[in-house]
Image (tube, rainbow, N blue to C red):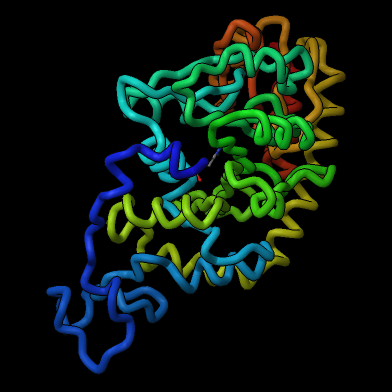
Length: 348
Ligand SMILES: *Cc1c(COP(=O)(O)O)cnc(C)c1O
């Protein structure tokens, strides 16, 4: 199925053979026109004058051990946003193919499709923000190559039912992408990385930007069938992930205790924040959340947004019809959450 879905000109495509993609070990490297004298700035012993490993073997090996998934099923990118763009470019023919998005959801899928002149088929999630399998199969076209799912979903905060995802994988002649950017914050067992080996057309997106606290280094990755990974490696920019980023990512992965304690604190604060929000007179509804944010419906979201902004507190507006009067609030530190709650409670 994968071969059928890939854009035909990319199957015969000759990728750039970078200097370092053939030989990794040598006595001296005179192949890449690098400066042999070192660099004017240094970072933790990283040889900044040298190009990074185009295939990020060490990092992919480490992720592989952590996730218990073979390294040839992992592709690393400049944030998951780069992986999203590359998946669209690998599978979708501009002005012909389409992607499907389940709304309300993360806006980058649509923007990345628009940039690539790929049509976006918008399908609503059901009243509980779950997948409506009948509506999805009715809406999908023969040109739909990718279906983007997000679990826990941004901005609604809920996990999608796993069985529904697997049903879609079985029923659709398309790649099913599950974006798990917030999965570490989920209470229930949610992650499906180990299911990729059972479903050839399933791709799972992950990132270090959220629970790992590393949005600034730009590292995301996907777990996918080895064929998909090998194509992604061929079409990406030769040195997409930089040496500082992969050095820091490797370092961070050695510190799982930071991740564990962050998750613990954010979950505790999430419960406290949601409880406090529910008791505020301006709040109509707080949606349950498996992520590090909460979707909150207010009587007048516009007024609340303006009032918070005047006090220097910025939250996220969502303007879709179904989310009128909703704001998405990220769980902050205990004192940030206190400030948010007292500011909302004080209506003067
Ligand atoms: C924040 C977020 C990401 C992360 O993107 P990066 O490019 O890895 O920083 C991905 N997907 C969703 C749904 C997000 O909300």
